[in-house]
Amino acid sequence: MTSEHQPFERHQTVYKTDPQFQIDNHSYQTQYVDIYFLRLAQLKPTVEEHGRERWDDLEVHGEPVRRVDRVLDVRQGELCWVAGTVYMDMPLKPNVLDDIAKDHFISVPPPRQKYRDFENDEIMIEDESGRLRLVGSKIQKEDLVTGCIIAVMGTETASGEFEVIDIVFPELPPQIERPIPKVPSKTKTYVALLSGLNVTGNIHESIETHLLVEYLLGEAGSPEDQSKSSSISRLIIAGNSLSEPHAQATDDAATASSSRAKSKKYGYDAAAYNAKPTTVLDTLLTDLCTSISVTLMPGETDPANASLPQQKMHPTMFSTAKYYTGSTFIPSTNPHSCEIDGVRFLGTSGQTIDDVFKYVDGDDRLDMMEKTLRWRHVAPTAPDTLWCYPFQDLDQFVIKHCPHVYFVGNQPEFGTKLAYGSNEQVVRLITIPKFSETGELVLVDLETLECEVISFKSKSGVSA
Image 1 (cartoon, rainbow, N blue to C red):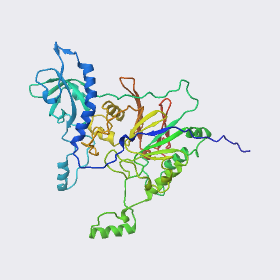
Image 2 (cartoon, rainbow, N blue to C red; image 1 turned 90 degrees about the vertical axis):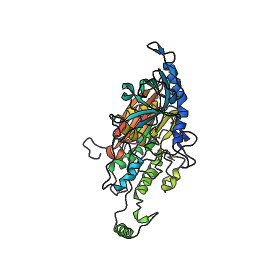
Image 3 (spheres, helix red, strand yellow; image 1 turned 60 degrees about the vertical axis):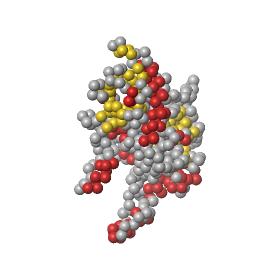
Image 4 (tube, rainbow, N blue to C red; image 1 turned 135 degrees about the vertical axis):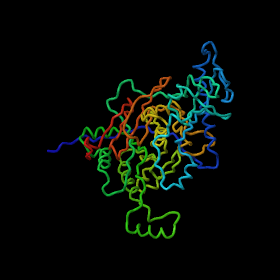
C-alpha cells in the first residue's frame, strides 16, 4: 500500500530590483578625489542636521558652542563643531609607492590582516578647504575608517590639533513601513541567502552542494522538509559562486606552458582556461531555476569586474540557465538592493566588510555592518583601499533608503542581530558564511524577519 502526499506549491512573491548600483558608463577618465567631494556634498546636510539637534544652544562651562562652515575656520581655544570626511593616516595601510618597491624585494611580504596601529595612526577630518588632526579619548574609542562623514565638537589645542569632545554620524536613513499582517499567517514565506559555493568543476563536487539543490527542489527530506522548502520563494546567492581560477592540469597544458616559457604570449590562452566550473554552475542554476527564483550576485572570485559596484555576470556565460533570464534567473549587481513583498533587502558579497575589518580593532562583523548603516554608506573605504569606479555625478554607495534586511556574504560564520534607528527604524543584520566551508543556508522569514540556519554538514564535519 502506497501513501500519497498532497503536492506542494512554491510560494510566490513580488520582486522589484533597485537599479541604484547599475553603471551605464564605465569610464576611468576622471579623478578619484571627486568621489569624496560628492560623498561630502550628499551627506554633509544630514550630519549637520544631527549636529544642530545635539549642539545648538549648548554651553560648556558657560561658553556657547558655535558651528563653523569649514575645517580651516576652526579657531584655537573656541568651542565649535564642524563636519567633514574622515581620513585615517595609517603607516601599515597599502601604499602604491610600496607596491612599486616590491619589484626589488627578494620575496614579497605577506598581506596584513589589520592596518590599525594605535601608536602611529592619525585620525583627521578634511573638506575642500583643508585637513585637521583629531585627538582625544572620545575619538580614539571610535572605530572609524577613511571615507566616512562625521561632525565633531571640541576645540583646537595650542599644537594645532582638534580635541574632540563629542561626535555625530549621519545615522540610519528613512525607512519605509514594512507590511505586517494584523493576524499572523499560518504559512510562512522565506527568502534563502547563500554565499561561497566555490564550485570547482571537479567530478567529486561536494555532496553538500548536491544536497542543497535537492532540498531547494523539494526532492529530499520528509514531507515536513518538502513543505518548508516550498515556502522558500527566492534564493539570493551572494557572491563567490565559482572558485579561484586555476589552469587545467593536463599534459597538453604542461606542454603549452613550456612553449610559453620560450616565447611570451599575450591575450586569450585557450590552453590555460578551464570551463568546467562555469559549466557545473550553469547546470546547478538550471536545475534550481526550474522550481525557484534565483538572484545571482558576483563576488571576488567570480568572472566580473573587480571594481565595485560589480556589474551583473552576463547571462550568456551560462549556456542553459540564460533561457530563464528575466523569469526565474536574475543576474544582479554587487552590492544589490531589492524589494520582496514590500521588505527591502540590501546586501554585498563581502568585500566591503572584509575591508572595514582591516581598519578596526575588533572582529565583530555585525558591529561593522551596523556602523556602515550609521555612516549611511555601503563601502566607505572605497576608493582608498577598495577598488571602485570614479563616480562623476554622485556617490552610488550612499544608502538612500534604510533596508529591512542587510546581509553580507562570505563571512567567517553566521551571525544576526537587530539594529535600531532614532526614527523607529529596525534592520535585521545577517552575516552569511561560506557554504563550501560550513554547508549552511540562511532562511529569512519575510513576516517576522527572524532567521533560521539549515546545515548540510554533520557536527563532526562529515558530509551529511
